[in-house]
Length: 215
Image (cartoon, rainbow, N blue to C red; front, side, top):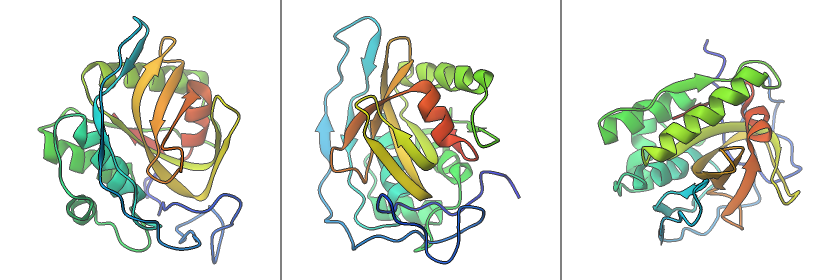
């Protein structure tokens, strides 16, 4: 089995997944369904030569297991696509157990945009320097080509403000911009109440370790 093929759904920070750890597929728990909200259009921001933010529609996931459909929908909106999360979830094969892997997000992104996306795995429990460098390069190329990047994370990621984002069962987020030579990347998180945060490249690569991303 591909190392990134694992069930991944959003979970409340600090809660462990029900019925098992992160070694295999498991359903993450959440206090209750989140309120579904309409997409919010966000204009592009390119106020500095070394900072680029994509125009996109932010989407909030309506339940515990729609993080991949929501993150994929955000990425699709960077190319002017506006499918419903339900439609995207059907194409991804999302169930109440989550979405299998970024192989699925890559497939659906290519199907709905005409191509250009590739899957990259980050094997091991932490990212190697060359994997961090590749992530930085891939994000730069994708954002410059006006493609949002879908990232399958697991465990804890700490943003540049020092806030921890904890998903022991796995989670999907979208990269919608970069700054400082792509050493910091802007995350649109369909689960997080803040919606957005910046995270540095090494931290994001480690957060993606054992999973992968579509760029």
